[in-house]
Structure formats: C-alpha cells, structure tokens
Length: 215
Image 1 (spheres, one colour):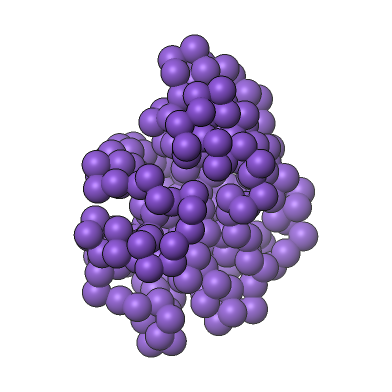
Image 2: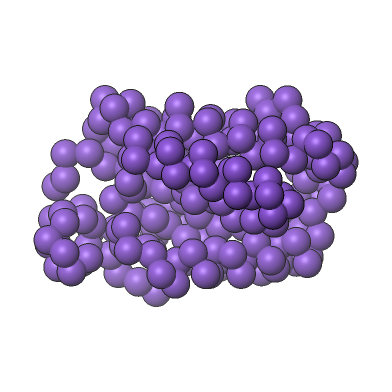
C-alpha cells in the first residue's frame, strides 16, 4: 500500500460527490475535505452576474484548494477523501472568466500546482443531467439557482476532456444514476472498485498506485 492515500471525487454539480465523500470517509475512518463554497465571499455576486466578482471568486477557490490539499498537510493523514479534484477549479474558470482573466488565473494556478497533493485514485461520478438538476432544486442552495442544463452539459464535457488525457492516477468511472450513496451497500460498491495494492503497471511509469477495475 502506498504511504499516502488521497481519494478524490469528481463529477458535475448534483451528482453526489459530497455524499459519497462523506460516507467513504466514514467507512475508511479517513480525513474528509469538503469544498469551501460556503466561505467564498465573492460567490453570490459571481452567480448573480457581477463580472467584477468572477476572478476574485475563482482565486478564492484556488487558494482554498492550496490550503486544503497541500502535500505537507495531506501527508499528515493516513487516508484522505476529498469531494473534488484540484483541476475542477480550472473547468469553472474556463467557463466563467474572460480571456484576460483566465490567463491571470492560469498563471497563478501554475505557481501553486507543484504544492498540491496528487490523488492515488479519482472516483469520477457520471450522472443524468435531469437527475442532477432535480437534486439541485431539492437542496435549494442560492448559489446554485442559476445552474441550467446547458451549464451542466458544458461542465460534463469539461470533465470528459480532463479525464481523456489524465495521467496522474487511475480513474474509476461510475454511472451515478444507478446508486444512492446514502446507502452503505452502494458505498461498498465504490470500495469494491478500488483495490489498494501496489501496482507499478497501472500508470505505465513505475509509480505506485491503486489497481482499479473500471466500469
């Protein structure tokens, strides 16, 4: 088993990332990291269309992720489950920022990325857009009121592009429409897809990683 173990959950808004992360962390007695959207002082202005809030909002998330996912912090825990991947912020920045703002964002992202812990496995949840919209409506978060089917489809395409060329670690792709991660048996199904034995051949470069059964 690798000394450090970071499991990151990815997928569009409403697909069940935080629910799965919370229950995986409970099952594994792991440290849980949640995205700090509720602490972002610029987010509401951003979602209300105030263009001057977009870059500060994305930079808040960037430096929040740096604080949460620093290698030296992650190394202090035997197992960590995070309800996002670091690159999630880049997908939102691409969608929300003007070209010159995105260039600034990317410059700062490059400067912090070397300090970010790399996950040993990513669980990528793929869900039906209408299902995700229904969940978003049910939980009623003001910051999500403007999310549309078009927005979620663009975000899904962003994740697909991200993982198409992903080389950092194995990715477990799961059809989230088939599962309810409030149910223990469905959480155990995810764990069944992750075998925590060293497998130098998973990534083809001699790096220790999880052996993953992809579905």
